[in-house]
Length: 451
Image (cartoon, rainbow, N blue to C red; front, side, top):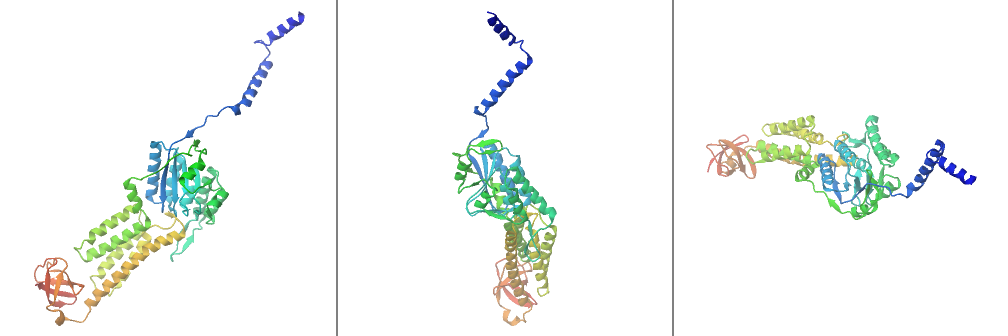
């Protein structure tokens, strides 16, 4: 009985009036039990589902590229897409535009998958930087990345690396930080810039530069299903791939902003103006103005003032040659100005363009060759004019012959005689297309009258 009473008193003391150390012991026991059971409890996690929006970035990165990426991210956000897939096949491109794409990728809440595609594609220089900065990095088989060392063209057209430590260190620091932020190989990232390292898909995966190798976007989505990106779990095993169609204005801008095409448009515009101003009335002036405007739009009006000066000077010298007796000296000087100006006009070297040296050489060659061809044609035309101008007198042979007015002869103009253009002076007004009779010759000018 005493024992039972003692137990009752002990149990009573263990209640609310129990000592503090006994209360702390019970709390610690409950906390330990909770920690043991915690791993078995389901953990809430953010997941994303829905289709994936694919954006093609093929060819050089131009002023249109960052606008296309921005429009795609906006559509993906509004359309309920779970991720954006950048399909890369690029030699690199504008450094300013690349920085803007990296900023958009970092600021968006939508996971960005960078995928070098299709098989055999490349992502050099700026393309490598975009790949390493993505949330998920992948390559198709037989693709190549790397060649990220800044280079420029020498005066002889040879590609030479930029050894300025300030420039190189800035790119190295950027690409290393992007690799570190996404858990990728920082040593390989450095070597892409420092020593022009190139890796194929298998090497890139083995070295921890990318995470996946897939032959198609659908195969890639099956591989990344369940992976984490931007604090979300991707559910992509059955996700559909929808291709982004840029608005018509961005498609046109992407076409015009290709540096080679923009340079050719500028050259066509300049030569069209030359022929238009030297032979008014045939409409080439309008073609020249339109081509120049399209070329400037494609270049984003980011032009070299010195190059513009050389182009205008060359234009003036060639026009002066057509109305002088310099034996082609002015034309040759003008052609040299146009060729040098056209090379400087389109930015091909770092920092404007972050592309390998071989691609810079190809762009420069694509601009120089048309200039040489057009220059050869112009030289032939000047030779024919000079031959006619300084030919011995043939007054007896041409008087009485017929020619055709190629424009309206309001006292002066041009006629077509035996397949050649001649400057002519008419006795009275002759309409375009009418036949005239040659009555005489004064130097390189024919005197004509209506038939």
